[in-house]
Image (cartoon, rainbow, N blue to C red; front, top):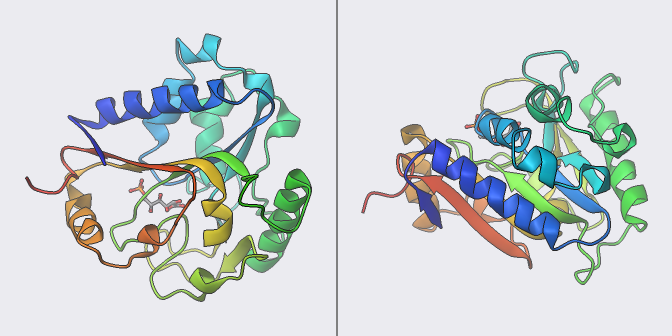
Length: 238
Ligand code: 6PG
């Protein structure tokens, strides 16, 4: 757990960790973005200097951990957030942006399509522990202990190794819209994972999680590096 004095400190720490991880990767880079509100200042920071000039944008592929099943231009859409805060402002290659498509009949179909997208990018249907799918996965923590759109007691938590994306009919926290989420095996297949948690409203769930409560966010076991970046307001009381 890395505790920062405030959200600005969390953003700076996350941005420098992301740049360091990208620097360690010589070929294409696969970054899985999170949704929610916490990452917005981080995405805006990456669009600013020195990152705008420094990062090898042409080598980076962009994915999402989950999506709300709403149109792209809906304020609740996670991809829309990333475009407005970052991707529209830096020289990314459009063909390297792999959004979870929501202009489809339902979240189940969107999940099947994204599962196929990930497997085609990876080049196999079987995750090899020695060859992670992602270089970096960003995740948030909901007040109920969910991460991505893996909610407590959800059957999505039991998805098998070969199921990388599922549809979620009923979100248990706002926004109460259907979701599409990566599963635990897919999220765990990464060289590095950064959880971003900020704000006093998260202190209770952080306390409970680090006291051992088996929330979904506690079940993302990656063989890669895992960092919890938490600001002072959300950190467990000393
Ligand atoms: C989503 C996110 C979700 C989010 C947490 C925390 O689609 O909502 O992927 O897992 O990270 O709910 O959200 P906040 O950052 O808004 O607190």
